[in-house]
Length: 154
Image 1: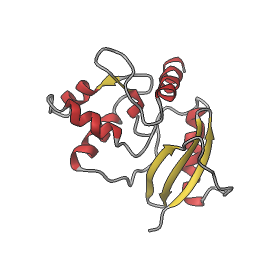
Image 2: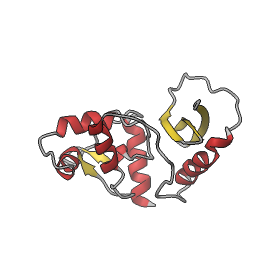
Image 3: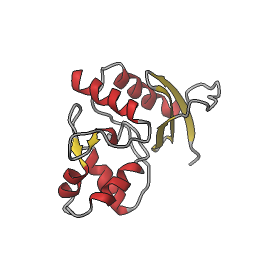
Image 4: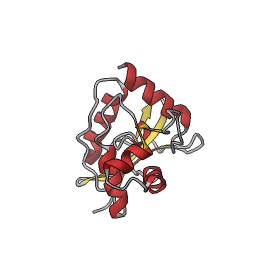
């Protein structure tokens, strides 16, 4: 089934949601210089756009968005574990490695986290360093800091 794209204006910049009637394959932040086509939201992505808007308006802490994103078995195991990190909470790469029963896989967990295709919905932004410091985020550390602060204080 063909994928469609919706764009959403957030406090952190424009985001792209790519999916179809079966679910969402990809959610990410656009680069500053990317041009956003002036398009209506495809009907198959209306719910997903609404849920993201609710999140950014502080009215949603969990998502019902279905994922059709594909990764390796290991990546999907890590992404599944990320979904268990509650709104306003954080975990480290080592925490996730331990939770999936592979405590030596910290670097592999970090790599799987970096390849998360569903930004915010699969909360890779809730991963911090073992020392409590912010670590990389594909959307930029300033966005990660904003998201964590918003979740902690909401």
